Length: 91
Image 1 (cartoon, rainbow, N blue to C red):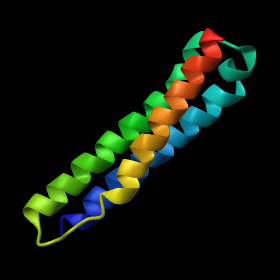
Image 2: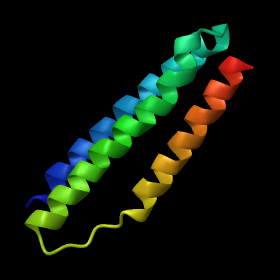
Image 3: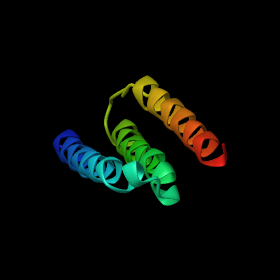
């Protein structure tokens, strides 16, 4: 019972972050606005935090063992994207 609402919430968050990232990349990122270089990686962090919360809730309330590796990989890629964005802004 708990899995389906968590999957729907995570899917909605993923769609919202993807649309936001697309809009930011198409308009302000191409113009070179500084805030856009940080906005996309921060959106990935918000999405990862929501997914981690959903997985932790599932793991504590159901006899399940959700895979944390994809979320950890997403966080690492988000950190890499943030570092590369900040290096692009600074240089």
